[in-house]
Amino acid sequence: MLYDTASDWLSAPRKRVLLFAMSGLGKTHVSSLLRRQGGWFHYSIDYRIGTRYMGEYIADNAKAEAMKVPFLRNLLMSDSIHIGTNLSFDNLAPVSTYLGKPGDPDKGGMPIEEYRRRQAQFRRAEIAALEDTPYFIDRAEALYGYPHFVCDTGGSICEWVDPADPGDALLTLLSRHCLMVWIRGTEDHTEELIRRFDAAPKPMSYRPDFLDRCWRAYVAETGLAEDAVDPDAFIRWTYASALAHRQPLYEEMAARWGVTVDAADIARVRDDADFAAVVAAALDGRQA
Image (cartoon, rainbow, N blue to C red; front, side, top):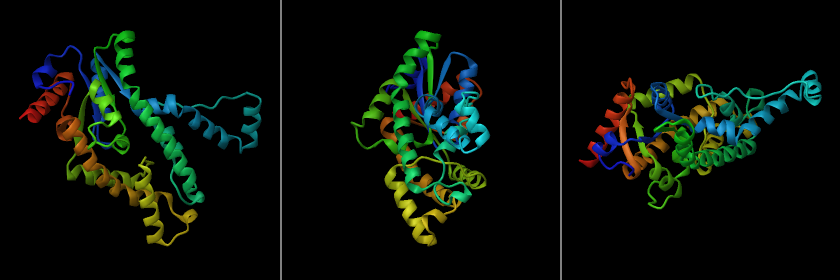
């Protein structure tokens, strides 16, 4: 790993970490806190996806909807208005909205084939954004003078890697440049994430084989035609399975490629010194 011991980490003039976990366990919170402390560059994978790799898809989708309205169509065709996104680290809704949900179009769903196509676009975008990490490490220091770097990943990073493969290209690249830190939740966290998701279902990204299994099982269980599936009902039904599917992947990523910190400890971080101490304790625990 980039830092073998707590002493290596604490004395390092350049601290570089990559945070991974399910959404809602504190990745963006602690990354933003470090950015505000100064000295840390916050590289948001989801923001990079939305601005660099999927920006045109998202904008074109919005334009396609606007073109259905004669008043807006005339303005677009005459270059009288511009349609774009207002992405930020705290507002990634345009990415989620574009990914969408499969099912009944009258309930905001899309055909499953279109959903699969957008999932594939997101997969390529997320891998490309993760592969940009070394570039942003160099850019952050050379251009802005930031000695420290935190990569704030999306919850689906585990979908695109094989943590059991010591030659996994993406994990090899990332671990060479960053200390990989898993923020581990408890069963209580899992229940809260499910409760929160059930109240406000959001689009997610899954590996194709997992999505296909869930879709076939849901359609068979409900007996519904594909275009009659309630989009929110389907992704609610899938979410708990996704948590269970991802947990062992995260665990193996941490065991083989990085360290583990508890979400409760991350929640208590108030400054970069607190964060450094939490990571140092994790390195001590791994060494022991």
